[in-house]
Length: 88
Image (cartoon, rainbow, N blue to C red; front, side, top):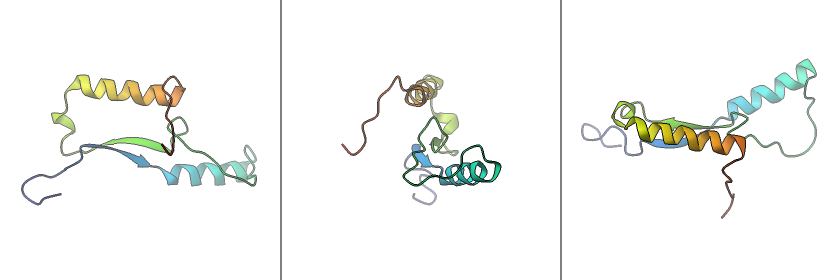
């Protein structure tokens, strides 16, 4: 970030949505639909735990074709047709 020169140095990034995970875990426990169990819980793209965030300051400057491809990649990760290897 550079004031007055460039409002956003990284136009697209991933946003961890811990709020979604916490809400879903509490809701599942309270309404009985998914009682809390010991062990790790994974919240990826499909579950809404990770989101693509495009910088609002430059969103209108990114070509539509790039945004379309970005959505295709996001959807592919969510449905499993694109594999993501962690810790590599």
